[in-house]
Amino acid sequence: MASFSFTSIAKCVNAIHVLVLTLLVLNLSSLFKDLSLAAVAAKHSSSNSVYASHHHGHHRSRHHSNHPDPDSNERLNQAFLALQAWKRVIYSDPHNFTFNWEGPSVCNYKGVFCAPAPDDSKTQVVAGIDLNKGDIAGFLPEELGLLSDLALIHLNSNRFCGILPHSLANLTGLYELDLSNNRFVGPFPTVVFSLSSLKYLDLRYNEFEGPLPPQLFSNKLDAIFVNNNRFTSINIPASSLSFSASVVVFANNNFGGCLPPSIVNFADTLEELLMINTNLSGCLPEQVGFLYKLRVLDVSSNKLVGPIPYSLAGLAHLEQLNLGHNMLSGIVPAGVCSLPNLANFTISYNYFCEEEGIICQNLTTSRGGNIAFDDRRNCLPDRPYQRTQKECSAALEHPVDCF
Image (cartoon, rainbow, N blue to C red; front, side, top):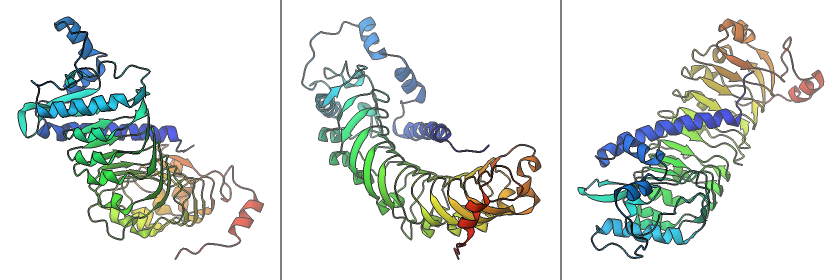
């Protein structure tokens, strides 16, 4: 049985995240010569490693200054002011992530990573903040704009709330922004469009609402995750020449309307498109078949009608295709069934009345068992677990013309 549970999608997303992190480190190596993945991983994986090193290396004073260190560089002093302001608006930290955010030695703070500045290798700066899975409650203060050397922010799985401060526009070197699984609200945070170096944007599992702005599709992002919010519409410009994302996840929003033909503007880069449960209606445009780099296409759990476009037979790289839980009808094209890399194909819970050719009719056996195929709950003669004749007659009484 072929299905796209959100668990499997999450695993896919996590794999993508690992890939993007790898790319991030490779890019950061040119910016921060001494910041290696091994060093970051070692510091991150060793619980309280900074705290331990101070207890084994030298005696730490029990009293910490609330002022910047006059002997430190100005950029670290600015970071100190920002992090102290942030700590003041954190009202719950059950796992003590910020327990040692005291004193001016910000490079020793848990979750804070320093590296040589890209413009001055002798100057240390705060290059990254990782508070993932901290369950921290609070909000983001305007003072975060003082952290102008940041390359990455990871705040996944906390309870940060409110809106994003406009001062984040100062973080022009930010490469990766992960705010997923928090309680942020308001319209799409357009401040991210000021982040000229941003490549990875993860806003999923928040309470953002309203339309997705067209600027999102005229940005040089590599990966866009906005699933599981309250976005209400999607506006893909007729021309998106600067679009460069390979992964786009829109699932579990309330867009409504049709998937626009302008989706074809993503053809040169897009490899994964997930639009599960976004209240899409109308026909699946033939332009989807021109996204020639696609490996994953999931438009399940929507209100799509009409046939499968024959153009999908041109998606030679496609590995996973989920059209399930819609109101699609007509013939399942043989060209789609015979896609060379297809490993998971779901058309269940639609109103298809014919599978074209022997290859579709015997898909699981003709491919040596190397494909998972689910065609349950359709109107296919001689196939098991189909809809009743009454259901099929009512749905197919008024065929849809998409052309």
